[in-house]
Amino acid sequence: MANFDYLQPILGTSKRNPVFSVHRHRMTGDYHVYYGLELFEAVPCDDENPQSKLMLAHVHNTGVTLMKLQEVFGIDPRTILNWSRALKSGSAEKLSQALDCGKNWGVCSCSTETRKTKGGRGPEKSRMPNRFVTRTRQ
Image (cartoon, rainbow, N blue to C red):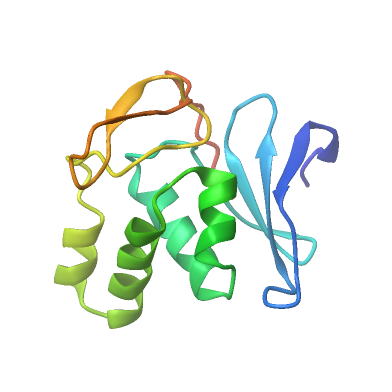
């Protein structure tokens, strides 16, 4: 069971998304996604990690708006929409192409490095810590 003292809520439930919430673990920096009160997954806060991209696609597909996700996570809404559509398509090829880890996709809300946006329109600030400890649920 998670120690809730270390979790900071960053995305709560709403009318459109009544059950999923996302919290940030203060010690590890990981995102903890909850379905109701049950831990659904723990994902590293890393804008290049496919797990993080999939988490945002899943959360968007549950009804969270693109603007809310951009506000909380700092990722371009078009990029999140691309991931969501690829996930919904059921095509492994489309999903693999959308989650390409070799590209700079935008800005993560936890970094201080500068990255180019997906369209190559120039640098944007990113607040990503250099290291993450990934914890998986057993």
